Image (cartoon, rainbow, N blue to C red; front, side, top):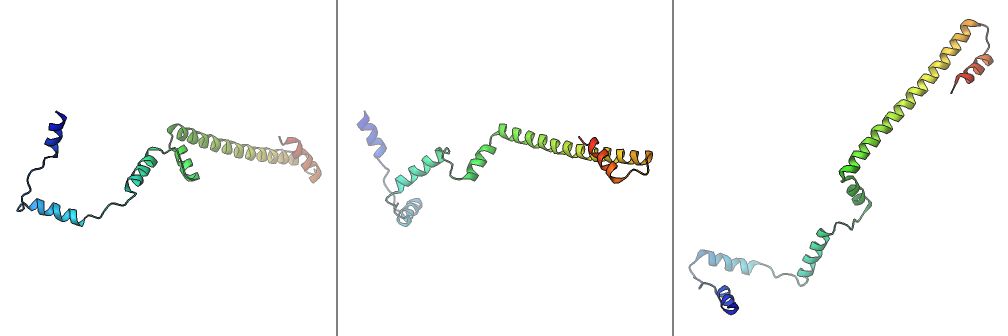
Length: 129
């Protein structure tokens, strides 16, 4: 049965010389370049490289692979927001500390207008956190 089946598939219809498609096929066969000697190994190497993205070449590829994960994206954005809030809180805290020192100095000047600079500096040093 296998012999009959292979004979059926290997049989080709007779070629009609007047068929326009046959002329087109013949021209394309003649115009096509011969494949390179190492074509098969090149094709298999490219297929293997496409299937194995585990071998990342450079630092940028590794960074891109890390940022491609959705969980890392969420963690990165959350970290950036928290870091921004920390910086903002630090700045506000420093501004409030300066304002409290100025307030204490102005209060001391109102109480004792003859308070010298040494007294003002010692009073501001005792107020700072």
